[in-house]
Image (cartoon, rainbow, N blue to C red):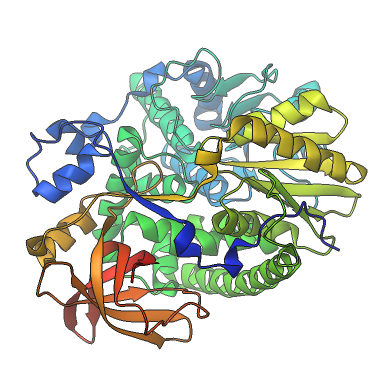
Length: 587
C-alpha cells in the first residue's frame, strides 16, 4: 500500500499550461565582458561582471590555508606518508563519496603512502556515515587512523566508538553540522562553525583535494616529496565529476575545478575508469561537457551504490588498467539499466496511486510517499521525479530489514530541507532516528509507526516556509533571440561558455514561434519545425519525453517555447537545432 497525503494530479492536465516562462533578471552589468552580446547577457544573469571571472585557471583557485582544521589534519596524515602507518578511508555510497575515496587513495599513493585501505558502508546493512556498527568492521582492518570522506560531521557515536578503541578519526566532509560537532581528532569542513573558507559550496571530493594540496605543501617544506614530484592536478577529473554529480552550486571556485577537470579529460589526460565510463555512456571525451557528468557518468557510478556495493564504482575509479576499467564500466552500465527499470516501475506505482485524487482536493505542500516493497537504493530518484512533476518538496520512503523506514528527500527553491527536518525533529524527537543533508537533498531514518505523524508535521513545516508564489512552477529563461542569433557561432560559444550546472544554469531562451510541422519520433519525442515570429527562418526542434495525450496537436498554429540552442550532428552533417524544454500552446 502507498501512504501519501492526497494532492492534485497535475500530470492529468497539460503541464505546460501551469508553467510560467519568465526572463531571468540581470544581476550585474555585463557590458565589459569580451564575448558575444547574448553570452554576455547570459553571464550577467548569473552574476558575472568582470572578465577575470571568466578566467577559469588554477591560479585563481581559493587557497587551502583558510580551511579550519586543515593544519591539524595534515599532521595526522604525515605518519601515514612518512612512517608507514595504516590509513583507512571511510567513504559514502554516492558519486561524491566514491570520487572522494578514489582521490584520497590516489593522492596519498602519489605522495608516498603505502598502507592504505578503504571501506564504504553498504547502504542496506549500515546506512550512511561512520556508525558504531561500521566502526566494528573497520577495527578488524587494524587501522592506525580513520579518515572519513564526504561524511562524518554527524557521526558522533561512531567517532566516539573508534577513538574509545584507540583509533583517532580525521573527518573530511562538506555537509552542514548539527548544533554540536563530533569529538574527532581533526575536522576539515567548510561548513563547520568558524571556518572562513569562502566557498561553502565545495563538495566532499573538493575538501579532500584541498587537504591533499595542504599535505603536499607540508611534505615539500620537509623535503619529503617523492621524485618526480607529484602533480595533484592530475586528479581534477575526479573533482569535476563529483562536483557536478553532487549538484552543488557552481560558484567561481567550483567552476574552475570543473573546467580544469573537463580540459584534462578532453585532452585525454584522465583516469582509465572515467574514460571507460565515457565510452560505455556513448559520449566522446573530446566533446565532454559538465552536463555529461550529471546525466551520463554519474548515474552509472551511482547504480553500484544504489543496487549493490559502491566498491565496484570505486575500483573503476582506482584502476589504471584500461581493460579492467572497461569491464567494470560495462558492469556499471548494466546495473544502471536495471536501476532504470526498477525506478520506472516505482514511479508508475506512485503515479497510479496519486491519480485517484480529484483536482478539487487540497494539494499538500510537503509530500511523503511510502510503499513497503520499494527499493531503498532508488527512492532518491523517485523523490526527484515526483518533485519535478508536482513542484513540491517530496520524501520517498522504503522499509529496511530492521523495521525502520529509510527516506530520501528532494526540495524546491525556498525550503531548506535539512533545516525543515530539524524543525520536525524538534517538535517530535521520537520520530527520526537520524537525518542530514543539504538545502535541496536530504536523507532520514524514520520510525515506521510514526509515518502519519511525520507526514503531517513535514507538511506543516513546508506550509510555513513556502508561499503560493513559490509553489507555482516557473521556468526562467535568458529572454528572446534575434533572427541573427540563431547561428552555429553562438551555439558553439554557448556550449563551451560553461561549465553550466547548479546555480549557474545552462543558457535557456524563449520566444514565440509558428508551428510549421510536428510529428512523433521514438514513440514519445516530438520533432518540430518552427518559424520565429517576425522571421523567415525555419528551424528544426526536438522535445523529449512529451505527453502523447497532448501532442501532436494539429489545431495549434502558434506556441511559446523555452529552448536551448544546439548543434545536431548526424551522419557527418551538422544542423542547428532547438532543444525544447517547455512549449505553451497559444493558438
